[in-house]
Image (tube, rainbow, N blue to C red; front, side, top):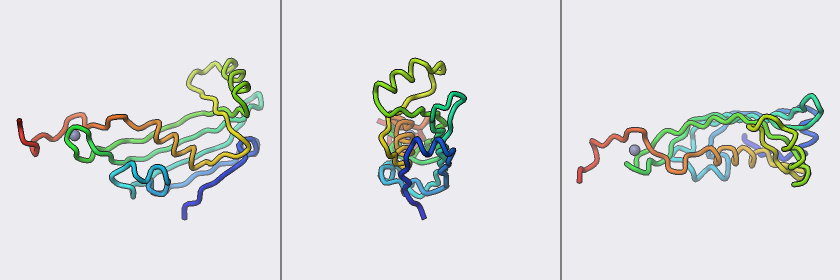
Length: 148
Ligand SMILES: [Zn+2]
């Protein structure tokens, strides 16, 4: 049974907690309508961590293979989801700016969070951000299309 988990992000990071599982992509409310095959499996893992300087961050991974509608031939096209990101936590925009200035690795992002964070919402954001704007086959199977 899939349950959304709302945590205190700073506590989650301090205690090095992890939330992970394998579930159907359709179990995520905001993803349920996105794909042709909502029964596809999605692996997700969010782990709280602190860096050497004690700064809290989340390591967020999502993996799966889903199908969307190809915008050229209108048949399902496989879209691989594979994200692996470090998100530093800041409690305000000001803190986020300060933090961003000290981070050397530009791949790392800073996320402003409140006292609570919906981890499933985070996963949904990660997946939605990674989707192609216009899903398309590299080579569509044009045989079944009528030539104009
Ligand atoms: Zn196509």
